Image (cartoon, rainbow, N blue to C red; front, side, top):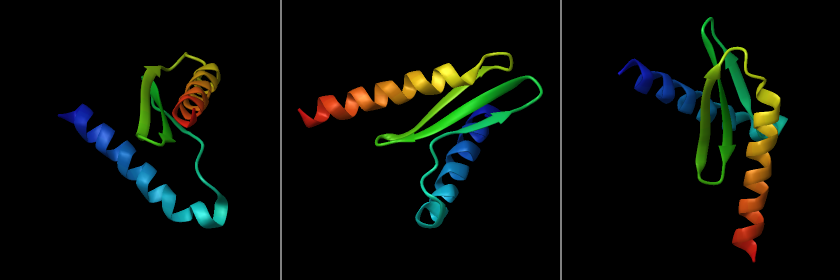
Length: 79
């Protein structure tokens, strides 16, 4: 149940961030680091990508991979 609450909190935070898109631009990603882990959230057309990872994982390559997949998905849906 706590993990459900964590995911709901991440989702709510992402939704609230959209209120500022017109003024500051859309959020590309958000990384939150906690004592034992970190999580990455990235808005996408289908909703929100959420990834939990160990604290020592470098999240930048993962962000690049997700961004590339999102780009490939967009190109595939256009053709």
